[in-house]
Image (cartoon, rainbow, N blue to C red; front, side, top):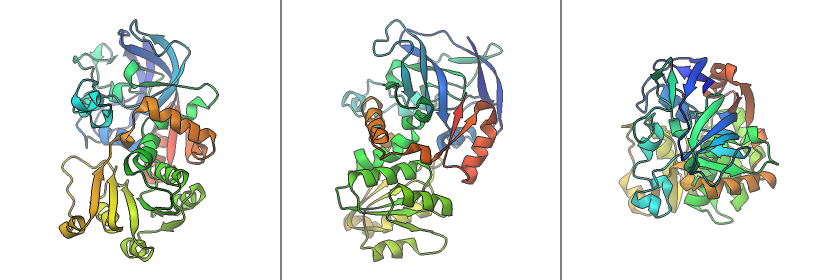
Length: 362
């Protein structure tokens, strides 16, 4: 079928709205009419080739929508279901078999190869295969082809256009706290970077009972939002020594690095008490290195890499929806909606910090 999509034709190029052809549905696949799709930093990593991709390309990996068709072997979904699309794991490596898809041995290929596992394209333009199948969806489009494995059914009584970021950004930030770091009630945490991932972490930290929640962010508006969402303290890293201020508070039991900036990662580690755990979720260009004081690790600090919030989407996205319904995950406070035609403005607003989470409505 033919559909409108946002296509990038070259490294760091503009998104161009044009018509593409979506491949025929396979037995394990679902066709989703996209209602909302979040703009995420990872889309820009692909656009700018910090992770290698080919062009032309269709990105988008925080899609929500309505199932239009299902393949013959699909059992958990049917046409008319409301769904959120998330990341894809291979399902057959040792980590996947152990129920831990975020540590899938093939996760890079499953999400960044731009084609199906057998090398076939899911999207063509003028009959020529293009890079798509991004996170097994490429949802910067009116329709997306996903698999049953990375598509999660959601209730129909919650606003569907709001839910796409639950598939990646919100799942990553909230899951890093709830699933990976697992802070106890009364513990302290510092969150470095308050985009959508960091603010999701703030909300999750408040939900699980952290009493000292420090939001480290140079953008004044985002610091204000962090306080509204549950932060107990905010720090402007351009005005204060963040490590000294964290240690004045007794040091942090936990910290979470969301910026992908090596110097900030070092601050996140040095802000910990002993013992303490620093989670890393910021996606840096391949080959990025960081310098740490080895003694700061040897004496009881831990560094933990966290992918996709260490979450199994089928299990965790419903929990996030429960938090939303209870008022503890007020997504509407951090989003702004755009049409698909406004994607370049949405990207510009996201990259400049004017908007926390832009959501496109194809």
